Length: 299
Ligand code: GUN
Image 1 (cartoon, rainbow, N blue to C red):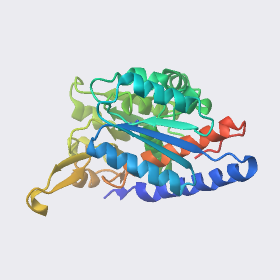
Image 2: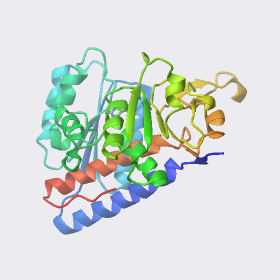
Image 3: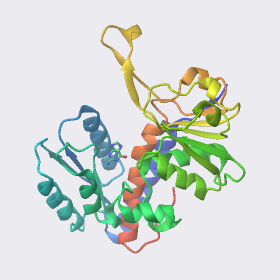
Image 4: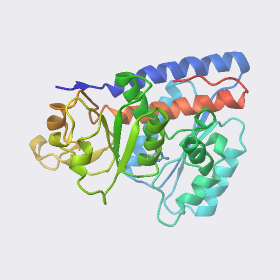
């Protein structure tokens, strides 16, 4: 029976440390870490994420700014807001919540964010730095960074000799996860919808990352006995057992059957999800340290 990796508790450790180092920076230099979150439209899941980010930023002692813009905001108006945040010395981190409405080119918006304030790690400069191993001056996307911290808590920092399979090739999770695992010396394979015999491939993994966005797709008999399973999926499914019209959150792995086989597993909710927000806070305070010319803390 696998140990359950308590992402909520580990995220609370990270945010507690963020608060301490943010307070230290403020006392030493007068600089208060500033984080701006921009949301366009009414997507309910995004609204919840953004509210959580603002609340956590305040709990960390940050200067927290939220721009809530209507669905019909023009691309140029959004560019103008991002540029004004780029030029605002009180802001060290900028996050534009995705997805954006169809009429806005998300790629253009992401590339407008100043790379040194790109706490999502989505700008080409940060993607390139991560891909070439310049991790000390990059921003690493929050979900993969948080997933790595969970893996570190179980297996340590050096994954030499371990095999890892990442299921999912997104720019936000799969590809940066590949780079982080590789940087930690794991032998890494990325699998995706065109992979042949996904089940057999998953079964070779000492570390299995589920990041496909398909509810409960990975079953216990796909998992190598003793593997560490990191479930990045957050899917809402019908839960008639809770009453008519009720729903619940599940991951990309079938938790019960996987827990019987793995040595450690992240739950959904309470696994990777809380880590994403914690790493956003870590990236923001790191950005403030860099802007002050101070050595950034590690998390
Ligand atoms: N939407 C879902 N995940 C993310 C994320 O990590 N960053 C941003 N900006 N939007 C998201």
